[in-house]
View 1 (cartoon, rainbow, N blue to C red):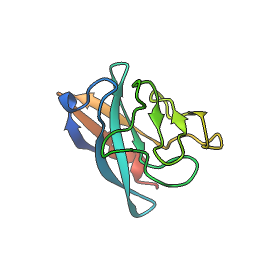
View 2: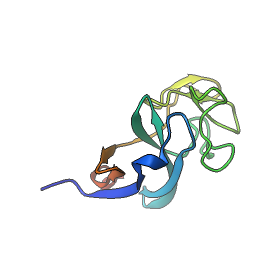
View 3: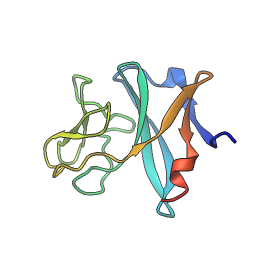
Length: 120
């Protein structure tokens, strides 16, 4: 049986190091903001929560990358995260990374793998 999937956006909506796409997931039985970005040609998705305190990262809606398009940045604390894996690389994240969501790019769409959310 195939994993359940939910379409987040079209593949073309995610440009390398550019604006991300916001969406909502059920996390611990609560609607929780999340986002998808493209980095090094691959789509990645995370909960939209800083590792330091649970505030949303984007400094303007959908803007998650720093000015150089290299790191994801928390607009509130300035913490920097690796867009490849969500690990904290600098700042007030207390070593806590971003909560990663599993996505797949198929048929020109970015899809969230829903099975991972079943036990949250």
